[in-house]
Image 1 (cartoon, helix red, strand yellow):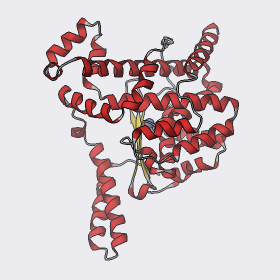
Image 2 (cartoon, rainbow, N blue to C red):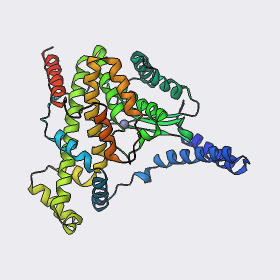
Image 3 (cartoon, protein in one colour):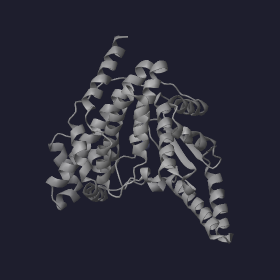
Image 4 (cartoon, rainbow, N blue to C red):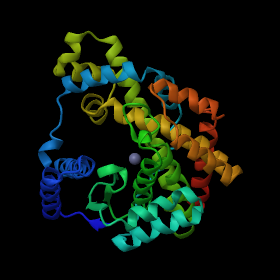
Length: 357
Ligand SMILES: [Zn+2]
C-alpha cells in the first residue's frame, strides 16, 4: 500500500495508457486500459472542480428518480425517523493518532475478529498497487471512500481523519468496504441496493466496543451520536419525500418559495439547507444498512460466529432489483427494525453509566 501522491498517479496513468496501446495481447491490453481508467477516476475524484455543488433543481430531479427505484426502502426510513433521539451532548476528546497507529489498529481489529474472510484486509494493506490517502479535516464529521482500482484487487482508500477516536473507526469502516468488494463487487453497487454500508457500519459497532477499553466514554457517546445522526438523516429524507409529493413542479423549481415554505413549517436553516442541497440517496444508503447492522449486532452479542457467517451471506448477495435485496435479507431471517428500540435503550444505559463516572 502506498500513500497517495498526485504526481506519481499521473505518471502511472500515462504509463498504463501507453502500455495499453502498445500491447498486442488483447487481454493484457485491456488490463492496462482498466488500470489507467481507474487511476483517472481517482485523479478526477481528487480534483476540486468535480465537487462543484448541484443546484436544488438538479437535486430534486435526481431525488425523484431515486425514490422511484428505491420505494421499497421507504417504510424503513419512515420507521427510523419515528425513533426518539438519545441526545447526549459531549465534546470530542483530541487523540491525534499517527497514520502508523491507525493502520495498526485496523490490522489488530480484524485479527481479533478471527474470521478467515477478513484476511483480505492484509492483502489490501500489503498490495503495492493499493493507494491510501488520509485527509486531515477540521470538522468533526468523518468520512471516507474505498474504490476498487483495476480488476477489483487493488484499492484507492481515502480516509478523512479529524484527530479523535473516530479516526480508528473510519479506518475500520473503509477497509471493511475493500474486503466486501473483494468478495463480491456487486455488493458495492449503489444502483442495486441500500446494503452497501451494512458490513462497514456493523464493523464500526464492534470496533466501538473494542475501543471501550482505552476510550471508555468517548466510545459510548460516539455510539449515541451516531444513532442520533441516523435519526436526523431519516427525518431529512422523510421531509424531502413529503415535499416531493405535496408540491407542484413549479413550486419545487422555485428556490425562494421552497425556502419560505420550509421556514413556515418550522424547519431551521441547517435543516432547510440539508433538505434542498443534499441528495436523498446519501440518506437512504445508510439508514437501511444501519438497521441491518443493528440486527447483526444483536446476533453478534448472542453468538459471534453466527453473526459473522450471516454477514458473509449478506456480502455475497447478488440480485438484479433493489427490492430483491430486502426479500433476501428477510429470507436470511433478519427482521429489519426489530431491535432498534432495544439498541437505543442499550446505548442510553451505557451513556448514563458513563455520566456517573
Ligand atoms: Zn461507507
